[in-house]
Image (cartoon, rainbow, N blue to C red; front, side, top):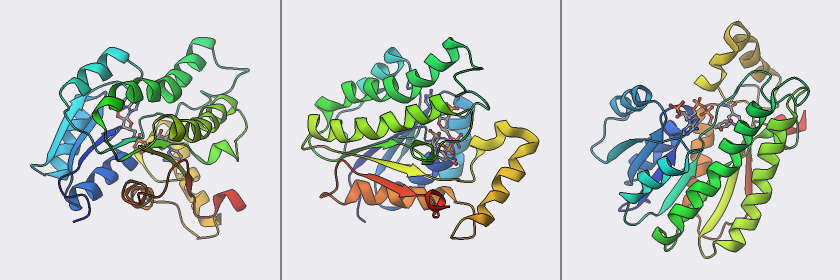
Length: 238
Ligand SMILES: NC(=O)c1ccc[n+]([C@@H]2O[C@H](COP(=O)([O-])OP(=O)(O)OC[C@H]3O[C@@H](n4cnc5c(N)ncnc54)[C@H](OP(=O)(O)O)[C@@H]3O)[C@@H](O)[C@H]2O)c1
């Protein structure tokens, strides 16, 4: 197994893309820590993954103290994946959204990465950090300026951190439309959003495992750094 003996940490691992990445990493032999804000979500994820190599931790990526506490218990870390994030309908519209909400979006997206990088640097001798971008970095939707800025900044940060943290490798994944609980906040509009998958070149919506397998590739290929892997079913082409 390709991750045998490796320690993998996934902040945002209790649902969707992070949860499927945890499942694949466990299947490859890793011991995995998943973190998120909701203890209940973590408990359900742990029951689903059902592995004695899995641990959970309540942590908020935007809260420096919470991230410090979580990493204090870790000795050596091999791979870190940071899918933590949420989607607030209209939450990225710079004309309509209050400054506090816009700031909080950037705090989770960008300063959350900073919180983690500061904690893991001394605990990683080699291995990888994978950040989360998204199709919005190149194909923004109307009213999504701050969301687009957040993920575009992540791509810049990916390349800069690949230099700053070398020989650790730093990459990002940029998913298109993926069917996960993230979209539940759209309520009755969720089905219409998911139906958009039919118009993609691949003819279907993405599954969390489509992205998870890309994250595993970025963990395992030790010649890839500073890269952004697009996994969007051709969404950036249409
Ligand atoms: N699904 C898509 O179509 C898509 C496309 C492009 C990019 N993305 C990005 O991919 C990431 C994962 O999305 P997903 O679709 O897998 O969503 P999801 O199913 O809602 O999972 C999000 C995960 O992040 C955790 N989380 C949220 N805020 C957090 C915080 N402040 N600190 C720690 N954990 C936090 C959630 O747990 P708690 O709520 O309990 O904290 C949950 O485990 C997001 O950043 C999203 O923007 C998704």
